[in-house]
Image (cartoon, helix red, strand yellow):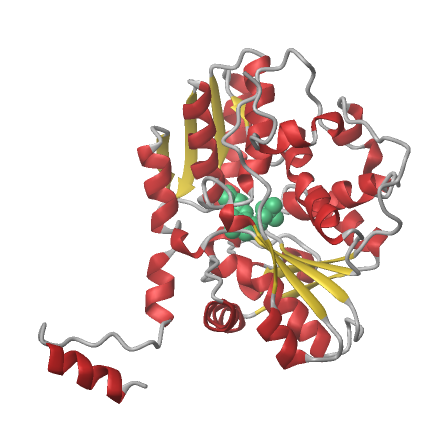
Length: 377
Ligand code: F0G
C-alpha cells in the first residue's frame, strides 16, 4: 500500500535526478529531509545583514551526512549483487555503512584508525554488526589498504571514491535550495576526504542546470542526468574548511601525519582532491583552516547560543564563515548556509572535556537543591 505522505528517503524524493530505475530495490533508512536551522542568535551578534543557516546533517538516521551517500551506494551495490561492502573510516562512514549493510542483509567490513575514532561511532558500527578492523595507522593508511583489498576480493568500496556516494550526497544541496527558494550566496563546509564539498557542487550545479567542469568525472559518465530546466539561477561560492593540523588543501600538498581534535577530518590525503579544487575554483570560493581551539570554541558556541550540538568537525564550517565575515572575505548582506555534518552525541568525550557548565553534587534534599539553584541563577 502506498501512503502518499510517508517520507521514504532521498532516493524516492529525488528519484528523477538519481541513478535508479523502477526495478531498483532501494535500501533506505529514510535519510535526508534534515532541518535547515536559522542561526538567529549568532546572526544578531554578527549583524552586517548576514542571514545564516545550518543544515543539520546530524539529524540523519545514523547521525551524519554519510547516510545520503550510503543509501545510494548500498542500493547500487545490492543491485549489482554485492554480498559485502568495505570502507576505511574516521568513524561516521563506518557507522553508516554498517547500518545500511544491516538493512540490506549484507556484510560490512570497516577499517578504522585504532584509538582515533569517537566512541559513539565505534559503538554504532559494533552494534550494527559490522566486522570492525582497527588498524595501527590513520585513515589514509586504511584508504590505501581498502583499495588494494577491493581490487582483489569481491567487496564493494563504499568510501566516497564510489561515485554513487556523491550522487546521494548532492541531494543536500537540493534540499537547501528547495527550502530557501534560491541558492545561497556562500556555502561553508568541513573538508576531510573532500567527497562532500564535491557532491554539494554537483548538486548546486545540477539545480542551476550548469555542467561543472568536473562533468567528465564519473558522476556524469554514470547514469546521472542533468535535466535542462534550471530550478534556480546561480550557485553559491563554496568555502571549504580544514583543521590546521590536517589541511592539505591549504598547504597545497598532501600531509603525512594529520592531527586534530576533530577526528572525523583527521585526513592528510584526500581522495577527491581534483573535484574539491574544481568546486572551490569554479565557484570563486576558497579553502581555509581553523585551529583546534577555534573548532572547539565554535562547537561550544553553537551549543550554548543556538542549542545545536554538533561534533567538532562540523563546527568548523560555522567557525570558518564567521571568521570570513569578520575579515571581509564574505560580504555583508550575504545569505550563508553551513553544513553541520554530524551529531555531537557521536563524541561525548570531547564535549564533556571542554564543557564549563556546572555539574553540582549535593544530597537528595529539597533545601540543598534550592540552595544550588539560588547560587547559580
Ligand atoms: N564532517 C564529519 C562529521 C565527517 O565524518 C567527515 C568525514 C567530514 C566532515 C568530511 O567530509 O570526507 O566528504 O570531506 N568523515 C569520513 C568518515 C572520512 O570516514 O566518516 P569529506
